[in-house]
Image 1 (cartoon, chains in turn brown, yellow):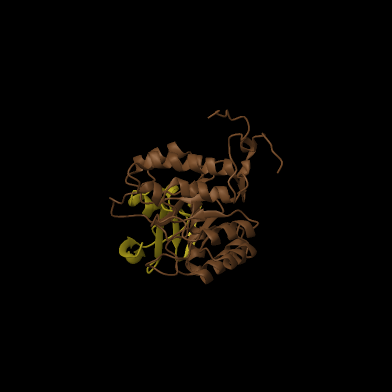
Image 2 (cartoon, chains in turn green, brown):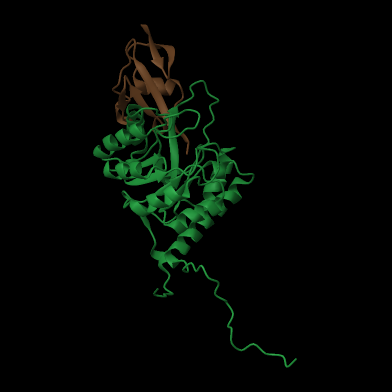
Length: 268
Length: 68
């Protein structure tokens, strides 16, 4: 193994579609206790990309929008198609998102089961295909099924986003083997999205070679979301730095860290 | 003449021929922060003045909200 002391991190950028991300933590904006807390988290984590949803305006007044007062112009926006249960619904939401944001990024999320919020493979694939053909930069939220991830890439996804665990559970990566296979097999960026619970899990994904991670609930529902946002951002950077540094080889035999020669001997 | 339309899923009475722009203003909605779907057709902000409401129209007024 060639040893190097170069620091590749300074030039390390993630390119997805027309966006350049230096911070590989993609920050969710849902379920925050207040817009003030969300603003604090975004200040602490300093992501380059944030997710959003599209919903009806509350016409009776009194509807809370935690995006009030957030300066979205600082970020690359990643609207999602959350709520869609069919490809057709996802495509409609994507069109609305593009009209609202003037951006062609879309997180395709087509849910197949209301209780587990796990993605519908067929709907996700169909929506990805349609929207990629229409010129959207599609980031597809999917399961940890390796073949499906490959099909999404073939269908034109600019990034594939396997879930670690069901949305909102913060259970952590349930199938590390599959997630690692996806990271290894795909050519497009792999973003681990959903179910991460603590920063070390995000760091682990980055050590494996994931391009980025997407975190929402683990930050929004932490006891101190602002501190947790900062911790996640630091962990993602640390994991990425470690991946680029190249881990030491595993040895199945112990090898002492201190020299074996030069020990003083006693005469008794 | 007052006509019935569906706005964000709810029935509402509006004057026939009201523009979408005027309706948004009457509801105190800032046009820059929303996207509007008029009978499943997405309107750009520049279309709001020209789009007129007729009986039975379906309007969706949407915005970005927090999400993951």
